[in-house]
Every structure is written in C-alpha cells, then in structure tokens.
Image 1 (spheres, one colour):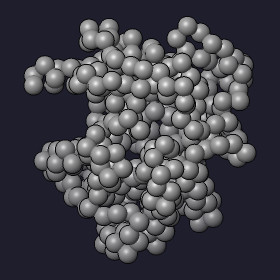
Image 2 (image 1 turned 135 degrees about the vertical axis):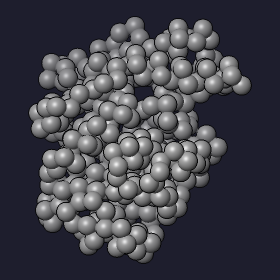
Image 3 (image 1 turned 180 degrees about the horizontal axis):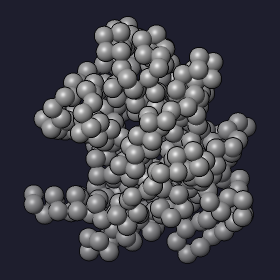
Image 4 (image 1 turned 90 degrees about the vertical axis):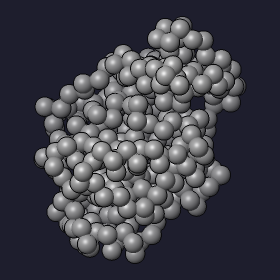
Length: 349
C-alpha cells in the first residue's frame, strides 16, 4: 500500500491502521506542511514516530509533483491500494502561492492517478477531497441565528450537505478550485478507465495527531492556543460558524469499507454529521470547561474568502452503500481526547 501525506493527520492514522493489519506500507511525505505553515505545521515528529512504531513501514521523502520519482516508486512497488492524503490544505494560503497550490493539489493528484493506471490499475485509489469543492454555495441556504451558532433553516438540508449539491457558479478560493480539479480528475479516471477510485469530500477531519496551524486545522490549533496561552483570532460570522468534526479513526474505517468493496468513480461526503457539529464559540466554551482555562480571543470583521457559515455532512449516500460503517467518536469524545493530549502534556512539561 502507498499512503501519501503519510505524516499528516489522516495519512499517519492510515499508516498505523494498515501496519497493524499486516500491510507493507510505503509513506510518501516530504514535510511540505512545514513549508506551508511554519513550525506549527511541522510533521517530522509524526514521521519519526511512524518509523519507530511501525515495523513494516518505509518512508519516501518524495514530492508528489515529481512525476518521474512517483512513477519509479509505483513501478517498483505496484501497490495493492493507494490512499492519497497529501495536499496544500489552506484556502487562505493558496492565494499567496497559487502555482504551488495547484501543482500540489491538482498536478500531484494527476501524477498519482496515472502512476496507478500504469502500474496498479486494479488498486483502489482513495482521494481525500474536501467540502470546499462546493465553494461558498452553502452560504446561500437560508439560515437561522441562535445564541451560539447559525444553522440551516430549511427542511431539505436538515441532515446537511449531500453530494448532489452544485459545485459551480460559486466562489471556492484557489484552494477549493485546485481540489475541484483533482476531485473531477479522480472521478474521470474511475469512469473513463474503469478504475476503483473514490473522492471522500471531507468536512473537518480531526484528531490529536493533527499538526494544527492557524490557517488549517482549527480544532487542533485552538486547543494548542489554549494550552500555550496564545491569543486566538476568530475570522468573521460572530464566531457562530459551524463545522462537523470527524475523527481520523472514523475516516480510516470509511477507507476500509471502500477497499473491501470498491466502486469506479465514487463520490461521498464524509464528516461527523449534524450530531458532531460545533461552532467556534461552542468550542471555546467547551475548552474552558475541560481545562479551567480562559482562552484569549478577538473577533475579526473579515471572514475568510469562500469560507462556509454552516457546513455539516449528509452521510446518507455513504451509509446506504456501506451500511456496516459507523461513527465511533462523538463530538464529546473528540474534545476529551484533545484535552487529555493538550493539557496533560503541558502539565507534564
């Protein structure tokens, strides 16, 4: 198996999971997250842990934009499955590095798809896409404002955003656009070449293994800010913007389900659903309850371009196709895990 972005949140969870299952896992990761986000985004610690803990793991510090290196690796390994998690993940940062963003997200994905077609055409190809393929379209849904959050105010979105939500005629951010290009290409390789490809359009994928930074991974970063007494900035929408959270373990179990019964050109929204949704104000309050600490925060009037006001995932399609899949980590479980890791490690220091 090949896992790209192997030292990131989902990639590292995948490496550990499949190593335990007895797969030989080759991880591709050149720590571009540190280049994108500085020391907060550095994943070297996770890479070192994988090399220490996973007996059959092999690390390859390859840039997925390097087509020759990717082709050479795939020709050597001929993987039984590909889990593609590597990305430039920030829609704010993309505007300052448009070529890097598109080349990593779109061209890098094309390199991996073509390498898979040439050297491992039967292998399931899993792509971690994003809900940002829908752009700011969800912001056009009528909303109701509550004390601590906004919510959808129409019955046909009571369960969240489904896969038939339109992706065009909307503002995506450059990051969203590059991920759309990759998403559509993954679908096309599945449909045109009859390959077993899937796009998982993720909401907030989270867990204590995340190297959260201000521009990506808000739940991880907000815990980091609270633990280290950093001031936190909320970007717009009164702090009432809502996201659903899905733990990396539950993401990997969805990957498992697809690998066991793959399809050609599949598309699924993947998140925690309404039950695992939380606003930033609610997050701050919950962190205070768990830690006894008061986070210092300010509210900026400027929301992030293309950002969602409310987004949570309608899981109906995936649950219909894979009825044995279940969410195992509730929103409270996720917060409790972050609290244990963030505040116990600080106390020990």
